[in-house]
Amino acid sequence: MSEIPNREKNECGVQVKNLPLPVNFDADSCRLFFGPGVVCKETSGISSAQMRGVLRVHDYNREEPFYRFYAGVCLQEDEAQLKKHHLRYDLIVVYAGTAGGEYKKTSGHYHSISAAANGMPVSYPEIYEVLQGHAVFVLQSCGTDGEITDVAAVQAAPGDKLIIPPGYGHATVNVGREPLVFADLVSDLCKNTYGQIAQNHGMCCYVLKEEGGFALAPNPNYAQAPQARVCCVQEYPRLGTARSIPLYQTAARHPEWFDYLNHPEKYMDVFMRLS
Ligand SMILES: [Fe+2]
Image (cartoon, rainbow, N blue to C red; front, top):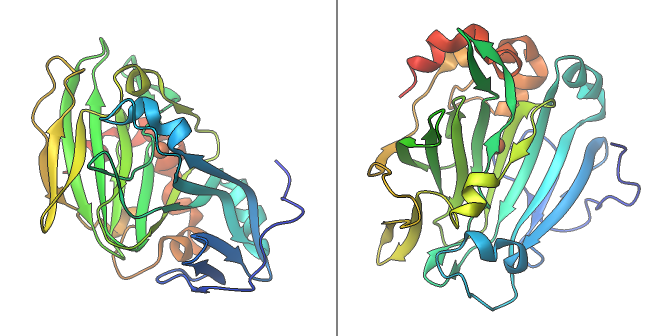
């Protein structure tokens, strides 16, 4: 990928909170604007036209934006180091609001296989960090024959970081009143796969707007999925996810700490201990 030649300039909006990079968020356009010295490799926008297949209301027919994705964001001075360690840092903005009673969200995906551990395929993990707004991350683990073995709805506030373990599909839901801005750190060798989630019209559960919060509604297209666990994020400072330190800062200074994102098969005992 090459740098986008006409990338958005840092001319409006206000600095994204909890982000140690000169990147502004403009609430009017719901877009990010990058300051001098910041690289953004690629941007894309997802609207209801692309989301219809994963919404609870399949025939939702209003045309409106859902989220914007900014891939490969970093300071120019950090670019070579991150590339050397096969790390990619992205920023995502999910619009506020609902569609058919369901909070706006990302489409949901699984990750490609990294390697094998004890003869079993291991997919790439990922780290998420909330920068502004409030999120619920929906996670679901899928067994080798396609059955869902675990479902979690993880609530997260600014500064919270969540490790997505190997084998878990995931989608991010904006349960706040404002746009949600969050980041991810992942291997640049990782590819997204959408098959099971697209076939089943979304993740195992839908996150609906309810007075004072949210409610989870099971997706009937999954025959025998367990009920979702509702939980909060845990801090794992030794995995680079201390709450008080921005994820970008740790990735830029200590990219070697994130070897587990590229070689998860070596860290299966660590992932087993995550809750
Ligand atoms: Fe992902």
